[in-house]
Length: 253
Image 1 (tube, rainbow, N blue to C red):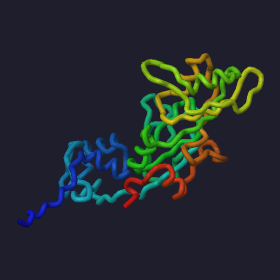
Image 2 (spheres, rainbow, N blue to C red; image 1 turned 45 degrees about the horizontal axis):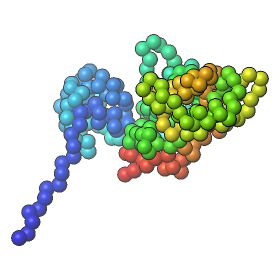
Image 3 (cartoon, rainbow, N blue to C red; image 1 turned 120 degrees about the horizontal axis):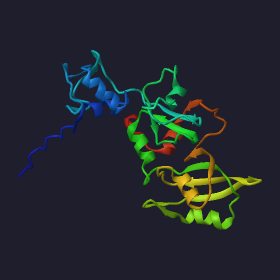
Image 4 (cartoon, helix red, strand yellow; image 1 turned 135 degrees about the horizontal axis):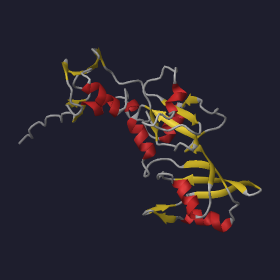
């Protein structure tokens, strides 16, 4: 007997705020605020529930009466200065990395991973959430390379201990690689490579071995290097860099 034809599966439904964020138009928090303010319509009807279910690609979305399409995917490398926080906004009024993008005419972008306020160097930003998720996933993401100034000159045994790792607050912290770059007086610069990014991982790892972090600069993420990019400056990633870091998400189609 011929098999009955199967109906194609309908696209999954997701909350409207999540869909707006996935389109790369804004953060999920911003999207929820737009919805609550009555600025968002689904199929011509204003909705005020951020979890209102919609099917991306099927339901028609609009904000302030304007139909929406996915934003053009953008992929940036930024040299984050020390002292800026890696968030879209800060409840304490501190400057954020978005200060570096003011006046650039870019769509909304999200940091890919983070650098804490006291750290500096290479930070990726994009409005492609699937691409960003692949980079920040410990199972699939690229190695990250840091140059770190410490308050002592570690010997070979201490460098080996950094690679061997230590338990701290219930987490296993270790460096994929640790080597001495240069030393002078009572300080030294180390190169530390991580294959995952736990909260303040390098500072905690060094502190567990009696070393104080003086400066921490991320100089590479996978094949993308900081190079001569000036502090606070940004550049677009090349197609080769984008593909080498992770498969594109929304941009792949």
